[in-house]
Image (tube, rainbow, N blue to C red):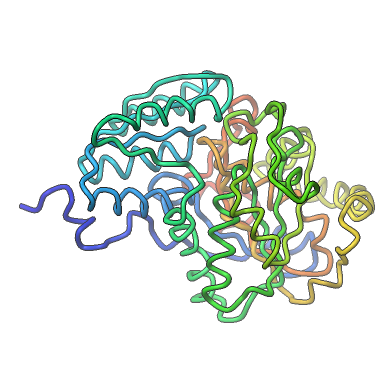
Length: 368
């Protein structure tokens, strides 16, 4: 019988190829095709398994005996899942405010859970200390080339289905791993010209702050409700992407993000129409001078990992979701593709009205 490292040795991925489906509801709202990449159907519920799984497989080949990861949710779940598949013990270090739902999920994967600090940065320091033990390897949630390489598989799947490039990609930024990975994927398939709209919430806007300053900026604190989702400093590679790719950084308030997630789950497209009309002029006024709607001339848009957010469990359904939804204020002139995952921090204090782990539960005709 094959050992626990058999799949690793064979080079088999831990992630699956996820559906790319047009959202009839969003397409009706914005007047052009809008596609969602359903990363919520990954084994771990988010796109994180792509990069984290890739990293874990590589360090396992080199003799890692214990994995440790600091995460507000999704990255930790991906690390715990990969560790279980590889037969390697895992310790996941989380901020103290992490929901019991996330902790239970991690323990269900067989991982040890430690709660340290108020925000991710503090939990990460503890993870780094643990990784000094012999045979232990620290899995950074978003800042490593292997993780970016794994996330780049999203774009390869897009090209396989679409054939031609979309008008734009919309994604959320927590620490910048998805942005770095998608950018690498775009370069790999020859789509470097495709614009990327990178969304954050105010108070967890480390990427936006860095873009404005032209250098890495460390936020004094995470004041957004998405405390498990945000990082105080974005990955340097994410900022570097702005030099080679057309990246538009946008920030929304928590109330906008929460409202958008709830309306997405409830299927309130009429309310969206009103919000888009109301906020479009404001959002364009606040955008960089170089941004012009006519920059997006294609007739389809990929809204990044479909209800998929970057951080925790419903965080995974909220971060990519907020990215997709919030960016719709630009979408009147081009199409989007959005990664779908939802995160707990943005979902009614961890008690979302609906879960999207099963595509059959997706409202509004998002899944047909």
